[in-house]
Amino acid sequence: MTQPPPEPGIGALIGQLTTDARAYAVAELAIYRAKAMAWVGEAKFVAMFGVSALVLANAAIIALFVGLLLTLTPRVGPGWATVIVVGGTLALAGLLGWLALRHVRKMSGGK
Image (cartoon, rainbow, N blue to C red; front, side):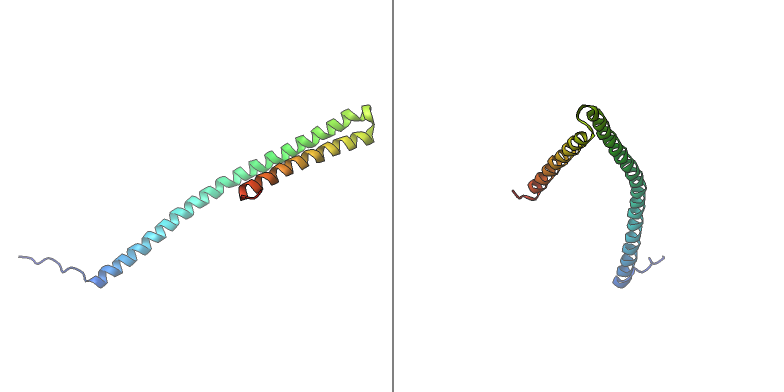
């Protein structure tokens, strides 16, 4: 009759547990690193397309203001057309800034 192999002691089991836990942590870290790198790769495209869209939108808004300036110039003259377009633009920027500030205060719980 053959004897079963002796069971490992508690020290050996704790050593094996530590080794397995370390290997598991390294494997998990590799998985998260791979996911993060894939996300960064996708985020590059999002950032590139988003910045391109913002640049094009900015160009369109500038073209709109230039067109408005050219449309107003024959009616009120170049000086007043400039005053009207710049004043209207600053008023719009002020309104949007005020709305943003109000929203920030609402988010932070202030009045």
